[in-house]
Figure 1 (tube, rainbow, N blue to C red):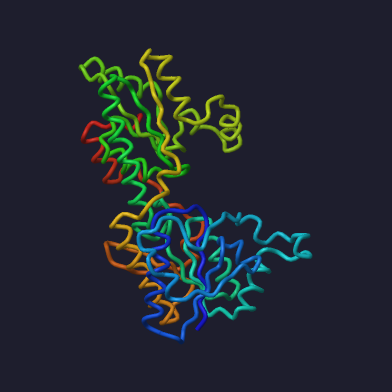
Figure 2 (figure 1 turned 90 degrees about the vertical axis):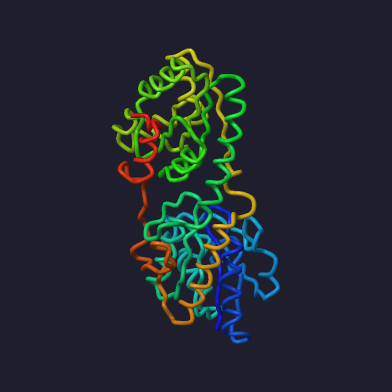
Length: 359
């Protein structure tokens, strides 16, 4: 049995522990009857044939290791079926199918997020046996309650907010902490609640800057000298939400500030006169060792993937529902986002504590 493994898209905590879970379970079950091949830098390695045979020792000592031992890259799904002069008119999909045929892979194990799963489904539709694992710090993959990497990123973002509390209290300032999340706000919502933010702004709930200012002024009037805003990098105002996609892109392209948080800081200062500081932890949220939760989750995902391979349950993504490991068809996952519902439990809990969502 020949298995190809790759990690694609943005990196996150837990990729190595997930690879370890799959590999160790396969080696334990099949022994010398299984060969595992590492595909370098995601789909790029599959396109160009950058592949190496792995052995059991390659998966030892990586449970706590951040990043990915296989490397990763982003390959746009939109270009997968475009004929390229580089390949003599063939497409990236054609090249990947050729590589799979050359190595005679019995299954590809693919670890990734939304874009990765679109391509994984494309490969499955073209006859490749695929089993995938849900990876993203955004927790926005449809079909699973949780993705690995999310909880580790929440812990880091929460720690940033915790640390900001000290300096915010000391100086009596308003701090904005910009958390990753272009399209969905799960990471900001969880970090904001667990870090004790006073205002949480996420893409799914367009904010009214005047309402945000009103909250800050009310806190100041009530003797609370500092405030903390957890703002998703993809947060948008109610005015932006009313724009067409083309208008929105143009508006953001012409924005003088480097990010939405800096624009918001300027708007708040203009309206209230309060001193604002912006903190952007950025890629810190992707790095470092996976937390204990993610180590357990990736182990469960990895061993489940190995079992699916043994049972020839291909074309599916490993998932978790109500703390039970299951799987869902790739065709149901590809292209779908799991967004934050304005009426979800976390939003209701935040509002019950008096946390403003900017509306």
